[in-house]
Length: 169
Image (cartoon, rainbow, N blue to C red; front, side, top):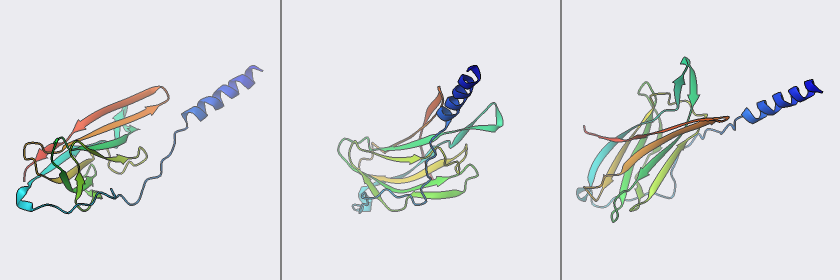
């Protein structure tokens, strides 16, 4: 009886630790948000660099903790639309691995558009990043671009965020 209970407890532990494996999409598109830009001279153009982490290291460099990433593109202007012209995803080595936004999209005042990178998608690595090209009518309020990384294993969890920084060429 004791062995049966021990086996049951072991099976229960293994089943509860089994993590959902999300399919990694092959095509990335934010649809239904395509935008024609207003007169280009009326817009402030910029670029934002956003660091993200597909995984982080723990214990040593061969042991990693996979993370789900939510990228938030926020229009902080209460009155004007922001346009995201491109959204390119780079891996740790600096290779562009994916284009999330290939053509201009709009983000309405006070609206947020999100990109989610599945926990199983490790292609970016620990030094992954995005570069977003954007245009805004409100020169004082560029888009706020942030990422939240999160994962849980059993009763342990980790989460943290990063904020994009404007880059100048």
